[in-house]
Image (cartoon, rainbow, N blue to C red; front, side, top):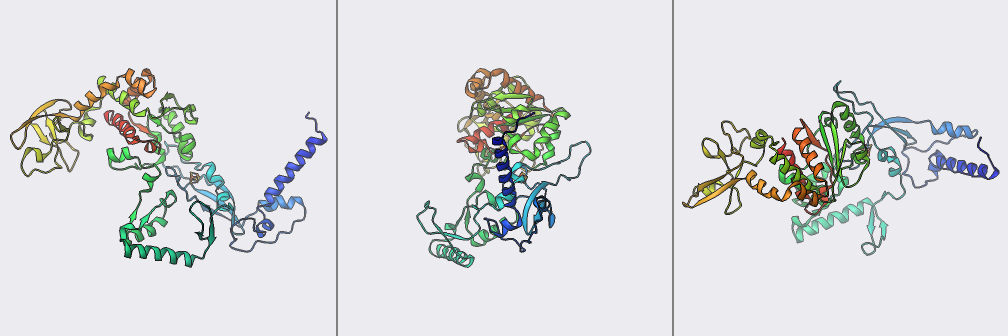
Length: 459
Ligand code: SF4
């Protein structure tokens, strides 16, 4: 049995007293004392404590339990459903609601959604450091000197500045710098409307904070790919490439581990053996920033081994399009005839030779594009030039990414580059856990494009 000495007893007793004091901080009398909390919507009730047990009983009573969520930039898994315990107009406790219905019997449900940041969100709401009043800077920038002003004064001064700027310099000199907090929810609507009415300029928040996924924008034309979190369950190969969803996508992470019971393999491709790597079937180490070389090395293996999904590549990618050798530009209608447009591009059909690539649909119809080859075409002025498919040019580029060379550049062993290529090529429904990681790198767009190439080649 543990020996209790006078010294340990005193230590435990003082710790207990501290714990009680911390709890009392949240009870009515402490709130009335205004210890840095928001004003209650109703006056706090007077609590008549009989003895110490009443303190404990009072702690577990509420005026209401209401549904709520969090207005933060969780991005990939926002708006988890919580029960919020309210007393005297204040949130005192949060609890995961965990009553999402099961949508499909064969797919795990979403319960419970939440994360540790959400579990203590009320601390953030009532933190004394939170800005709760309109403040005006009265010292040099960075000095931290502010004075409190009224809302009327703040709105008047902002409106005056906007009007002065428009009158003296023009509407495009009014710049909105949004920040991540503004990106979610209905508050954006009114602000966006005002921006449009003023004909003013808004900075791209995602680009500013490095969440922009420029490589995805360049490849696919958009940066966000909508799907439900439980979609991971249908994948048979999940790449956590540059991501650590065990820490950063907490509400959805269980779908990844549950997908393993549905036959999925998880590959974690990161420099560090992360919390996600612990749950993965394979950890593929890569040097920071070496991801593009890894992707290109795997892409080369896919092509060389004949593992490419040729039907997908022919229909869904630009790899069969023809590119002029002399200018390195796509062959365009304007090259072939006077008055031809700049938008029409070309494929090489096995039977008909050079044909227009469809612009209204990806459906190839009767066209059967040659994926690789060099051809001669006659330009509008009679000059003859050679053209090659994008895939032919890509194969040449990838000569610099043999497994050994790619291993040197990426820091990933050649055998693991091959493992990635082989699994990607044979996966039925590979997917990647999205991150806002590579978009923060200089030339990170090229990493994302190399990853997209690997997905495109393997369908
Ligand atoms: S991810 Fe966390 S902070 Fe975001 S809504 Fe869910 S519980 Fe709240």
